[in-house]
Length: 323
Image (tube, rainbow, N blue to C red):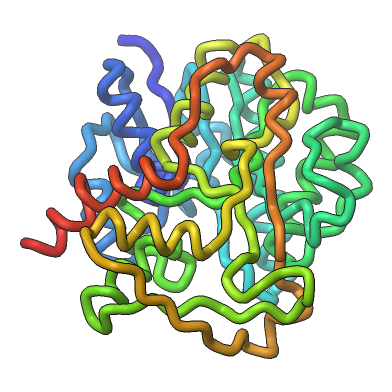
């Protein structure tokens, strides 16, 4: 029997969608995660996995040399909270754990593909290029982004980045993110708002060049994010850091209108004050530079907001709420 593919964070949002895609391809999968709620367990139960390992057990096996053999490792597991303030925890959980798993993968001959983050770009003043030369200069706005940046810069300076692939996911939305609480996409949270209140609340702008609700993000459907992730499995010769977005920035108002349209309702949007705690660190514009990924050979089109939100609403959110 061939060695499986390991997916850390495989019961999470992008991870469970990736495992589902690997299932459809016929791959054997070992999922590594830490399940602490029923919604995350539900994500895992819908999948076909050879084995499940708790993150702590798996890390112990890594250190003792008893980790299961693998043909490839997708390392998506991390603390993704942008409000986490425990630097020591993030250095250990997000940076050191990634380094340990990366080094183990390379020693064992497994392809290593890991999740970086668009949070590494900070306020965007240095642009959104995934070029290696830009990487060491980036200044994330929070410790989560910094923990991803620490590994990226280590991988670059050590030469490891020439042998692995890192993916900078932008604003991913889609099915099976329900367990993420406040870190869920606006589509998921706003769908519940509309059912409850008939309206969507968006943050006001505190910069004169942006009208209320016209702050912009690069929103990418999870199906596209998974397709990009699998590209690196299919093309193991492609290495380095790569953005994973659509290359198009859209406003929060665009996203809200797409949601109302998908639900067959007229738009009702209310603007609310942004909490003072995040005003100074709020990103007003993100847009992935997709030049490098396209040059590497990824040619598939990306779902635009209207089509992606419609798919999410009609194929997942509405059926789930009808249960």
